[in-house]
Amino acid sequence: MRLVPVPPGLVRRPSPSLEEARAFHQKFAPLGVRQCAVIRAAVLDERADPTGTTRVWLAYEHLQITGSFKVRGALLATSRAKKDGQGVVTASAGNHGAGIAFAAHHLGVSATVVVPATAPEKKKNRIAAFGAKLIEISGSYDDAEDHAKELARASGSRFVSAYDDEQVVIGNGASLGFEITLALGGIPDVVLAPFGGGGLSTGLAWAFAEDAGEALGASRRVYGVQSEVSPVMAKSLVDGRAIERFTPRTRTHAEGLEGGISQAAFERARSAIGGVLVVEEFSIASAMALALNELGQVIEGSAATALVPVAEGLPTALRGGDVLCVVTGRNVDRAG
Image (cartoon, rainbow, N blue to C red; front, top):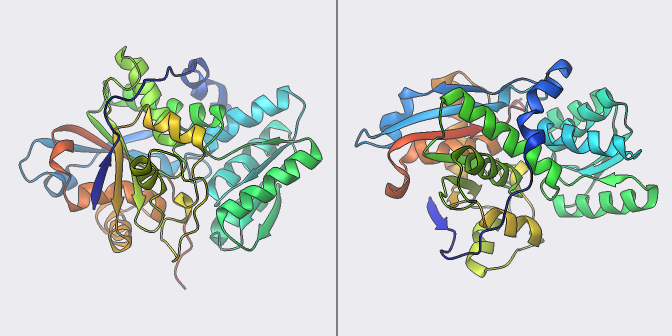
């Protein structure tokens, strides 16, 4: 495991209005959307920090209605498309697509979801169950995104990015951040979240900055976690520019975090977060097992990345106080 910090001295960017994020639960609870449960996980304290100064908390967003936090951003973005009289098209590794399908079903909007053929069957089945048109293509997530954008242009539908859409960022991250602050009765000292395109981590940082009454980036308490197989944000931070296309050479347990990051999403994220932790694949598998055996929770590999740093011992710079891991999804195919 290695920590890649955001370089100091970056220009801070203002966050957008988060009014919709604060009103999120009240607006969408009638559809069955759940307020996030925040759980104290004392069993992980010593693993995270042998000095005894760290308290571990878990945000159980894998218990969300579609099995993933991504229904949040999908609902905000799809409701905006409905106001504009548009259908929606998206690319997804699975969970964002299920969220879009759920939102489109309940809001009365047409939806098309393009996924790599390698996406887990459980995720593809969720998308189809909500009535969205499901298109599987060979190739990477980036290839699926290219195809979805072409379909959106041809049909006049709105393309809803899983990460590079402000409504998605506000829904996925900021609405969750406000719920976490409410559940804890304060803002956590450090937050660990799976990082793919960065929408979750960025939105969380926006919400915590607003709740703290701080300028964005004043307290960099949110850290993303990526697999060594697809460490795109870490590489982008080192290079100082976004790596917009990236195809992993091997399979990963965290397929939901694969692919490149747009320049806009990269700029949003690095203005808000503290850095990225890169973890090994065997550690992700071990964290999935830990969640099942010690916490009694079935979670997918992308979600398990956030548990790796506490399971293996936090870097010294991240120890102390309340450390919260965002557990993002449960849609994993069972072996056999």
